[in-house]
Length: 272
Image 1 (cartoon, rainbow, N blue to C red):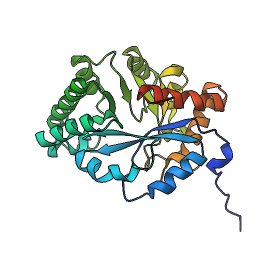
Image 2: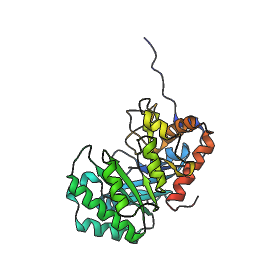
Image 3: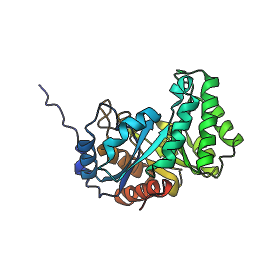
Image 4: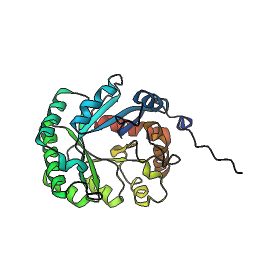
């Protein structure tokens, strides 16, 4: 009987505490937040962005992070929930941003035609309304877009978001799309799928994204990188994503790790 090969532990990458996970969902039942963040720091992830999917999730989950000053927050209504969104939700979001300096971006917001859990008309309406809120509050925007790239880009262009601080979350497209986003002055965040052999377009893209526009993310609990594909993701595993992108770009891992962490902190207006 062959012995099962043990997975490489993220601690063995030896990364310094300069890393940043720009996008994670840690407020769900899957996680012991204190333990997850302790593991993250031991694996070099100092800064984590927790994404609250709507004002109710924010009010319920924010106290989980009271003791963790290196966690910042994103708040937005996901396109999956657009059919249920109300004016009250928008007002609650506005109040939360006005009250809480740890809220650093409106997101993740956008369009998702892959699942189509909400009618496209509802998705587009509330995407526009949340973009308008971001402009009103002078806040950054973090985009979710799946199988709706043309409509998403058209709305962003129509509403004048070229040149504004915008991060395209969970990027998985080819170099031509990366160029379109970079030309508009935006940033790109890459998840663990870049470690998958069949993600050829994304693997080509990461070779071309300018060094100062590239961020890393887990999208935990989803999209774990190899060698943890299929397992629950968490910030401690971010180093495997960084290692593969650094290899594809021909860069030193430690220098790449620090630069991506600093890119995230700069984008979200945090102390580097």
